[in-house]
Image 1 (cartoon, one colour):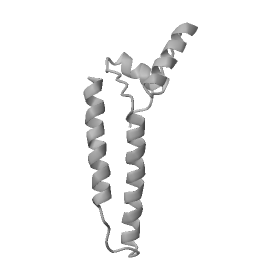
Image 2 (cartoon, rainbow, N blue to C red):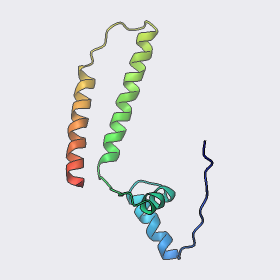
Image 3 (tube, rainbow, N blue to C red):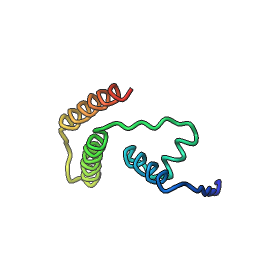
Image 4 (cartoon, rainbow, N blue to C red):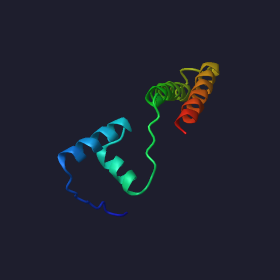
Length: 102
């Protein structure tokens, strides 16, 4: 496995502030933002993505809990229709967010 390498750079105070603001807006750490920018990777901010990811995380936790209960024999049948509906809505929301970002 490759060992992490460190790069240090000197920047003016206003440059550091600018990097911090842009990283915050992109929901990234300053290091991640600078790495992406340095490697000519596009940095895209998609407003509303936080809420979508939070909902998907909640639903993933619910699904995991049901899986554990099924393996333990505590439940035998699950109505997956609510999950299907959540994922369908999430997919539509994601497509909508991405269409506005491009």
